[in-house]
Image (cartoon, rainbow, N blue to C red; front, side, top):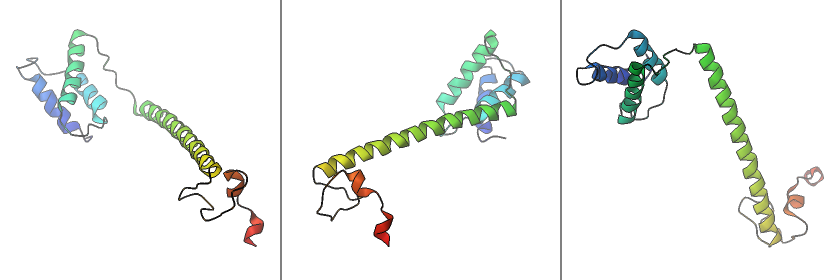
Length: 143
């Protein structure tokens, strides 16, 4: 059982009572609800939002507007991998953007005779050229 199955089971039980639908839900609908909401990270367990989402799906099912086809695990895994690839690429673009911004800030500080705590040459009184020229490692200096 997935982590949210207990919460989903209790919500289904509440919705099946005479207070809502007066009947037991079909097994295919229950399987769909477990599959669809079982992996969703609901941070606080049983919550009103989860209840409303499931209730909306049940309403749609009984109106004939819900496709309860369960996605095969392999297709789910492929979709998750694709989603993670997109997230990774977005993160890499953001990292590069931040690196460019840091470079720009270093150049501004350097050109005004200032330096940050993580910049090379904080104690260096010589401020010629750009910070990039200054911060490049030169192997001959380590001999």
